Image (cartoon, rainbow, N blue to C red; front, side):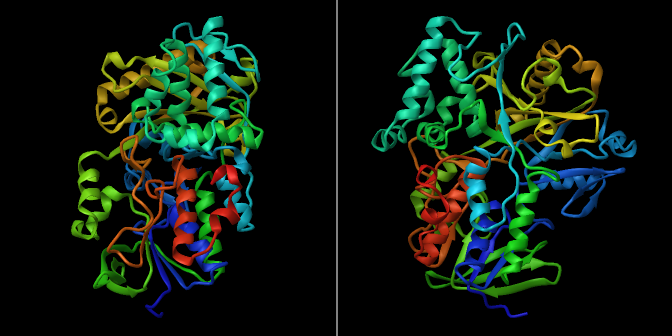
Length: 516
């Protein structure tokens, strides 16, 4: 095998595979993707139960292998009932598919994920929500929402303020958005209202889309651009804003992209980590890897790094990056994470409660920031098996929880247990049959699973950096023009990266204007 390539991509996650697919295909480049782990997809990790094992990328996993995979995406099991050994040995997970953490598509097939897959002629179903309900954490009452309808847990005045602020977000022009790029969403809210119910509701909506529990941490422009997109797409929080991927889950996106790369002549090497990026002066010349065959060198004049910036110093010396950027990364960047729960049940809780089965549920402010958390704690929940029945065995269902917490909170066992216990209590009151119908539960923490962020008002590190000729950066934490979070941001960044590498216009080719 020749060791010379047009481009080497470090990391086979969503951003890396997206870059590789476009370079190997339409750009006609000889591409090598290097992945440290022995699976593709990066943080898009999904598990499917098969007998007394779980399956990922066609490989059987026992309990230890499952925990090892979780660790590779900065996750661990905080609680399971019954314990993991029993869940596996008693085949209780057989036929269920679930994620390593909280994943969701934004705007279904009309979001950035759908746009890229359609462009590559690799479309897959991305079923979105058809309904949205709010649970009042104080009373556990359930309030199904209707387009243009009243928010039943709010007063008339709170309704008026909330709808006015949503309208302001939806109608903002680009010049206004640039001003909002400089502030946090917390400041945006506080400048407009002191109504606590309104603040809690909009902060909770922002929390799930940006995976940050504290509005002062959320870049206002990133979140509000997402809300503004709804006008152009013709969707809203009630229809299409949140979606899932059919069996085997979100890893299927990574598997399809990886196969696309291979079909176009690209090479993907798993179990092969990069130890060093090699330079010839200020220009990249290749990489040195450490894989099954020991150290190897692969040469290329263009290299793409998709590793989060707080972890790249393992193979890229700090002195290579601008001093001011390194200082900001060390002192101001932060990781965001999530507590995720998957609960298998014997009944269709949402349908039994008389609400649309494909609804997503919001429980705002179950715990106040004043009680020792950095921000109010909110719960987002869906029943993935209602969106796609293949995700659970016949006659069984899965309810999923996503709860944004900080890195420090996720390592505080008492805080994690308090959130889990209170969340369960609220849902058991709202859905009376849930406790008796529960088959099993798995709760995982991921403290760095959603990227590294600069403080609000600062942009992400750009796709290229001075003094690093031929080195490019892609991922949800890169790109001065990137906005959004998670998968949406990873794809946005990947497109900007490919344009910088080729002089092309893939951002315009792949994405409609409202996603650019």
